[in-house]
Image 1 (cartoon, one colour):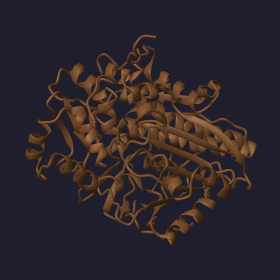
Image 2: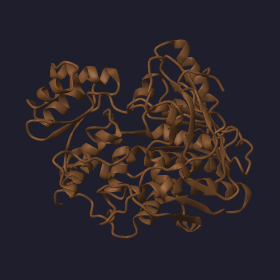
Image 3: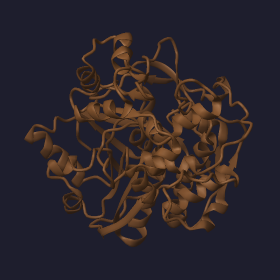
Image 4: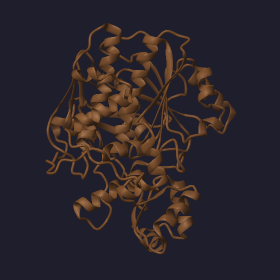
Length: 471
């Protein structure tokens, strides 16, 4: 399918400048970009996703930043900076589901137990999409796999105590905190002190960059994708759309039936069981031949496999290494399991939505905006890493987190009277039918246009494990 185109910390004071421009300046600065390059960006369109926060502005800005990285790479290679145009409506829609199945349906996004529950002193969210996370929550609660039974059990706990108990058991939960409570929390203070993206150069590359074409700027670039729900897959989906050879690796037991069709176009998907020495050796060999590694393992997970940052650099001098976690890389919660919806609860976003909309329960963002925005920032970091290797011969490491993206979102004022964006309509989709492994589907048109560049996915979405773990 191919398309053209000294006091206690306080919550951040919202920036009242034009939100999209504020966001892209912050993102581009975080990437180490020169402000003068922003003159090549055009962000157009109207409408907002309904939220207490400037979600559509974040959407169009993060997409535009990724596009600007593409244009900058082309400029470094061909000597001409091209215009980048990001569409606000399409960017917002890409922050949700991009597929329109034709004659079949996508599974529900959420497990029946997942959701927000009233505790004895507030609210808590349980994330139970993965069976082992659901089992952990049910074990702590001593409840049957039944929504009403879980609600009754949760009501007997304080939110903080239940959060701690579920996390200790290996599950995923987040008590709802206000923006000010998060700003005063030890983890909130740690995240606020972290850069939006930490970018460091590493060693000298042993190889010259692969050949590039103007129209498919990442053709021939090997991207090893060790990520799951959801920011990392968004990043590598964007890279695949530019022609990169993306190989996603999952364990034999993992699946994301409600998400995979949306995030794997253009990718090959394989499985490795890293408990087995043979499969660990295969992963090591894949890293040694990769140009870009995108990973979302919790800190220390790759080190336990003998693949810490230093080992990865030895395997592949000049590697462009991009990683994320949920709650930040410092502080007492570094390494805590987390997802977008949980970070929204922890960082004050769901509470602020509840306050602004006057609801009687948490009001999260209308889309998983932390995941999607972070994904486009990671894609931009990967592309800028390639440019750095091409121009200076060095590798790079970039880190970011969902919690830091939450801080960026909270720092910018939302429109006082947001105009409704509306649902996707036929004009928002491309005309080509994508023959996914689940059935035919239409895919949203890309939210980005870069002069001379074709954004296209060379393979339809395919099931996890449908390819072999090799380049």
